Image (cartoon, rainbow, N blue to C red):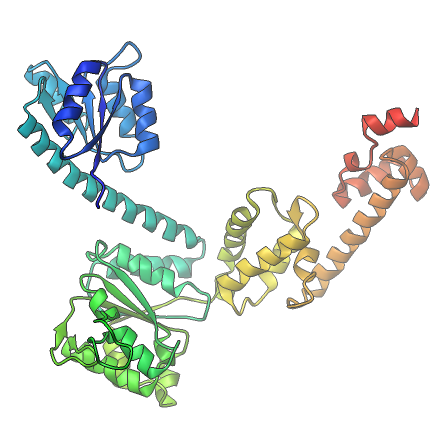
Length: 460
């Protein structure tokens, strides 16, 4: 059974709140808060679908103060102001400050229910809009763009998204083709509709046909019910056909027929079904080469390629490498690792990144396993025997190994002298000033080698 929508009543009159709850019991769930602080806490904790808010509340805050704080929240519920004042100015102020509506006390039950019902429809629209905006913000967060070529890609996406043209996204594996497809969908007029994704190269022709077009009950052994395929489920939204360049000749022919006729039949079905959808396809192949090699139908390519969006590989977007790396480092380390050493930064920018953003993210996650300091160093990236990275340029490798030696040597001196630098300088046969320079360059933390108070007292 579907749960009734929740209405929060914020009013300092206990009797009035009980009366309202009784009037709404058949249509809504209700809860009451009797002051501004409890009301705001209830909104954050219970996320009501609508709020009844008294204009005159308590000494801490009036209804307008609470209304302002509600509108600072993410996806705020519609607010209906409760007032005993029929003054037009009060009512106008309520609407100007963002109230969905108002109602005078004591409210008529039918009028109150009618206003709340319309408010709930608005709540669904507002939260759906906020959800889409939130997804767009999170998708854009994956595209950390400093390089001009990627900025041009996002500019093109903004232009083509409102149109209903078929889009073909091309680029190497790991460049973010699915994210671009989702962003196009979220920026389009179909954003409220479904986004259905299907991998064209992932299974046998029979299973792919079933997944795409669906089947009727009894169409084959085990078909004990009707099944709606991707084309049907994407009605009103977007169908994303990933790895279309890896699809079989049979599937390519069927896709071409569906796109041309704008209709299809379920397996075992006799009725043609039309689906209002936008098609976005993607491939990590080079289409023209695939056409020449007879692996991609030329007529299907031109049907899919209403507009082509090419995502350049990461090695051609040098300005994006470090910002993206810093984003994933913060995400994967929860802020515990501060950044990259200069040697690590140069190393990251020297790599070809054949797997693009996906490979860069995985490299950072592997390096974090080996990291012992507060910054990722070049050695952390080279310490994975299972999948060695490309060797760095000679200059970077020499500098990194020099720093590694210095770190180990200074640590050894300080460990022997229990963190006393003057003694460490004597042990190293250098002056205290020279040792201080070596210490600073090494990045060693001297406090790691000093005995704790408990150890010192134990020695006494």
